[in-house]
Length: 164
Image (cartoon, rainbow, N blue to C red; front, side, top):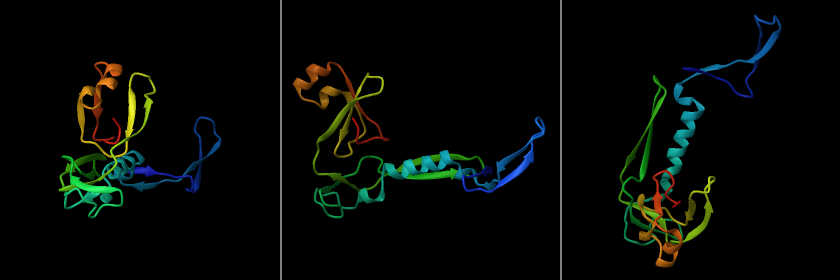
């Protein structure tokens, strides 16, 4: 367990043994290690990675169960996240499951592109989630674009599948 406090927690006064001055400290409540802000943030990130709304059951290229503008296609290799927290150790484990289909934006386009903070790469935002990918950019872009990029590598990670 850990001591959980918030801005709305009542205060308790205690004497600082070094200065002799009373100090106001927030009262805390005992909470499970799984309620730590970092653990809760990791859980939300796992939920956001593959929201339930993108799962479909019949990957036949039609809208089916998907929202307007989306079609149900074969799912990427890991399309569901399971988040488990070990309360005794306060450790989180994210595992991935498979499913038959996922809703993909029917428009496969580049939305925007920006330089990374250090200027060493270009982050391309896509209209739909892509398969996890790590290969030369020549497999993605046309010859004219590749002549500009040179021997650059393109990457799509499981955590940001709508960014190349």
